[in-house]
Amino acid sequence: MEDSLSLLALADRMLWVTALVAAPVLLASLAIGLVVGIIQAATSVNEQTLTFVPKLAITAVVLVFFGASMMALVGDFTQEIFDQIAQVSR
Image (cartoon, rainbow, N blue to C red; front, top):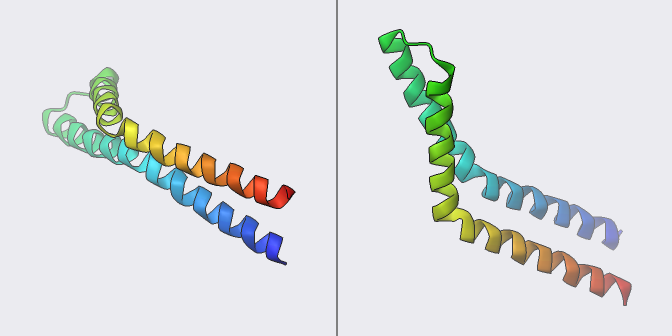
């Protein structure tokens, strides 16, 4: 019973870490896509590459600013997983 609870807690933590790592990139891309979509609707310009290039640029900017903290979060979670594996194997 204790093992299943620890696995569920680990799965819950894994989902939170995944959401925290993906959220900045997804939210920034969503915001830029919305702004570009509104501009395209207002000007009747329907060019597919017009939405792709700003999303690519904002994704690169977000990864530059938040990439280190994202990787630190993933690294800490990985260390936590290995610590729990070591505790279970004892």
